[in-house]
Amino acid sequence: MLSWMAWTWPTALVFIGIFSAIGVLIFLEIRTPGGDARKGILGLTTTRGDRLFITLLGTSYIFLAWLGLVGMPLWIPLGLAIAWGGFSFWKV
Image (cartoon, rainbow, N blue to C red; front, side, top):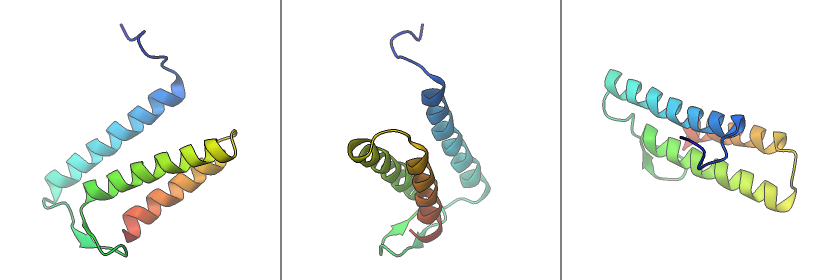
């Protein structure tokens, strides 16, 4: 049934992580509606969903740049992506 895509554990973990983050955002939105809008250092008023999107977009750029410039292994860009996610939700 799922043979159209080469599913590996790292691929599955990425999708599980993204869907889990969306689930947490749904739970937080039900608990405190309004999206927790705030103005960050970029000068944009962002909600939780906006910050998640910025985090995911930045993470993909980090990994693509690392693969294009350095190659394997991917532990360092993983750390950079986690730091970017923390920064995005804290300051953006």
